Image (cartoon, rainbow, N blue to C red; front, side):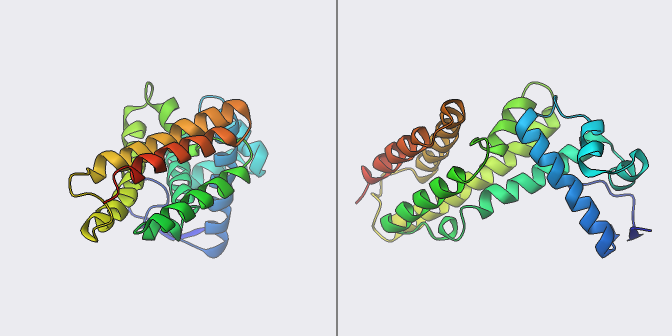
Length: 215
């Protein structure tokens, strides 16, 4: 068997109560990664379980062994993977946005990451846009990833405010939302143009807005 213990819990992604063997965990991860790539290219609606089976050389029984909830469970595992990928791509800069120089490094890291990606767009933003009108539960899940992202940006600004680098009347939450909106909007235009300059311009404008609130 590819798993050792499984309880009745149902959670997004791999269930903490499921202890897979090394082989089982590797196979499951491979399915999730292949599905993530397919969804990024064709969207949730354009990706079927048959597409996943063909891309991963897995049988129907294998697929439902790892994802008994079917496509819905698989998509939620993809959300977990892409959510972590998006944040990890910004680290370590994302975890230490406490100086103006740190924000410049973060911007460079974001640009370098998306320049290296096929398709340019943000997987979380794309999933959220597609799920918004069709799957309220999935949309709510994606909102949590976006809020966590904003919270990371906000935490850096709050530290800068406490250190006297940001004006006392500045609103870190609104400023962090401005930056995140710039990233998402810039990535949408970057995907449309198939060029990095819209994201570069959006980030430049967002950081200029931050600096206008410098102490």
